[in-house]
Length: 482
Image (cartoon, rainbow, N blue to C red):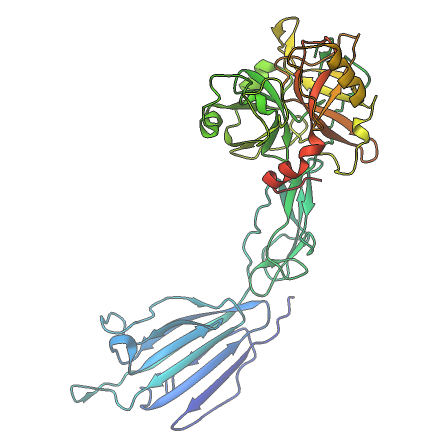
């Protein structure tokens, strides 16, 4: 049998005869006006404090109510307070148009206390006739606190620790995220929440704010294995590159998912070099842009539906009018709605600011894309494995071309690929990420963005060096994924 701590009820009468008696120690009872059911005395002030055990609230109703009616209940009245707030001032008779009769209204506290006060003035006369108003009879009971259904956790669930599951005082739940695609951030108070005596779910620090589920980056269920060869490449399997986006802005391009609502891509896929449409506003381009995620087959990924773009950000160093300089060739697309992560949709990680080993000569990376293959746009996601190349080799190869207007090779770029093997990225791959496996963390990291080249598979390809733009990226996104 469940045991309850008895409530306490204090009644004090001021002015006139003061009477008191023992109060039954139980979780319900009644309050009567002085002399009820006989008429209450004039010039009387009475008050009652109802205190029930912690974890309960007070619920009070009037079974009978008959007080002298007046505008604003100025003469005779009952006042009710709970939780440091007034629950109203009442007077009048049932059916009376004057006063404020409580009727069958239920008065419920949020805490475990309620205060009633009764006041009568010096007379109960109406046009010289004494009217015997009988006062009131109220019933109250202690009701177990109910916190209501816990708040839902986006990309996560809650489960009840106590059995049977309920939302009453001292019930306990735990939150968890949809692993392995999200991880929980508990803000210090843990993932365990208890129904408090105040009727709210709180963590161990007493905080109401629920945890958050943040995306996990760079941990594909089905990572690419082995050395397979976009030009000279082979088809990617489902989930090999779950961050890969197919973009349609000025023709086909690529991008990489960051977090659950950002796409990293190349600025020239939005404002192509020398294009007549470069005077179109970013807002207009955002409305017309199409972003597709979640499949390695072009027909399937388009059938799955477009992810509308909310805003576009282009790095201020990018100049669409200078066809020989791709410095600042980086852009961010903010999606209107976050995507739900899973085995075929997962963000790529950004590199650590202190790690430059990914750009060392010979460090192998992967590039995926839906670009050109044998002069046709590919129907499938392809990928190629390419080594990063030292700056000296890249610059030397560019110099050997002896072009009248040489391409700029800035510190914010790197090159990768082979001089003799037919493996490279091509048109339609622009904006896709150059990714490497960080052996220390076991996560895949985006180190570059497909930017420019001289032909397809005719030498090295050139990539925007993400390491040089981390502050810009994080300043816009303002969130981190782990």
